Image (tube, rainbow, N blue to C red; front, side, top):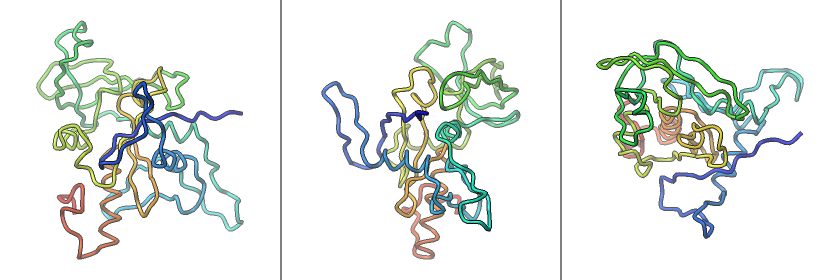
Length: 240
């Protein structure tokens, strides 16, 4: 049975240049390959890093303990792991989402995001390996509520503030990259928002949320450098 292997583009946080074809499409480089390997790896070394203050929601599947070698392990499934790259916000979650005065404005390119809370969420199953498309009903703090806001518009409050602080670009991110799957035409979330990969101890770890990727990277730096850690070494020094 064939497995879905996405062709991806990486938004780089360094000056490294990806190989591009004449039509402007980017070819996968070793960083992308490492990210995909992290999604399907079953080795013990790929367990997600656990920061001291929070657990990042790493897309790498954990295995169950067993006294028998090779037994009792959760066998990774590519599609299952890809489905974990899209966040799901529960009722009451604080988010940022765009607001439109009328339904006809939803196609406008001039969008403004506002804070609010998730009232409810519904899922529409598709053939996307990344899982269902989610639609949120949002109760805004200072606007009338909206229904059926598609998932690629909705961000956690923390991620939204990080984006705003970095002016929407990853140039200031340390050890974290944004991966986009341009080949998936039917699912806007991986094609527009994508997921995040943190380089931790030389390994690429995928995360659904930018803040989780940054926290995992920062925790690794703190554990490695200890008291020698500088605020400039971290993405979110205010947390530590």
